[in-house]
Length: 396
Ligand code: SF4
Image (cartoon, rainbow, N blue to C red; front, side, top):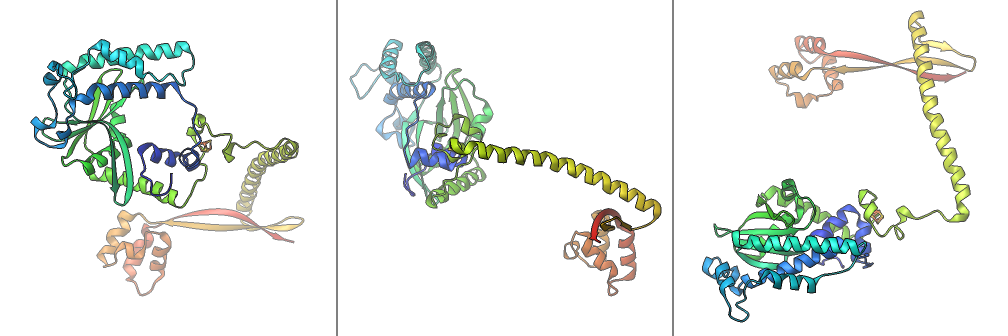
């Protein structure tokens, strides 16, 4: 994929997770091994596309309800030949399902058979639901492209429905085991689809929906507000800029567990066999030093505390050893409660921000003879001082 090629939702997500993985997929075009659940999703989407496509008329993009789509009754009752179309019977739909079945990537014959049964149940449930909740699609499996503030984007949208108010509802089917309402609320995919639909259709997007096929549940949310669109646009911009700059650094994370490019990825490159012994010695030494580092730090702290206690008892700050002198140093920190000093400064026409919230600026003010003496006294009284002791060494 060259810079300037339209970005899809999955491309953006992949780049944000790991730019190097994006490069393997979109530039080097290294194929990934097929996976059963992707094949299953593709099959179900294909059946639903063919099942509902006859509902959409070429004039579907107009807002007039009579023109926007056929009614389900017209669709069901029609015995006319195509293109009027009619609703498939369950048997016809299942026959098509068997034809469209993508058999790739299943773990075993049993695994595939389980998915086949699941798909049948899903589709039969969906078919039955059409009578109860007739859809009003204006587009099915629509490929939309747009320039989003200069960035080319695109997406395949499962379904766009007309709402009762004349607006649009953007739907994405999900075959996953579970789906929560928050998934619809937080879905960047739906946000991008809203942008694509708004830039390609004259009517407003009213609702965004993830349709959970296992439970036949539409998880609906209102269209995203401007702030959410801007937030996603910023991230899409990061991706677009990164691709243009050919920034393809590996970014290891949780996604590595399902990444198939570990063999090509420098993050997972193995140390060559002849170097292993030598490098493992270095690693062991580093580890041993690390362990001692902590031990030495603890001992250093305990010795400094013991020295401090003795110096306090004797009232001294210089303690000679055989090879050098330990010097006790002091560091002080001042804090001024803003609820006390703020009103005091304001009353004297000094804006707190101009003095600075830090103790150093207020201490300069306390020492400044040009500032009102009473104000300086009151601020000094409000301040609290903490002392920290530390030890320095002077070589003998
Ligand atoms: S293994 Fe991890 S770091 Fe390497 S390309 Fe894959 S996702 Fe990126």
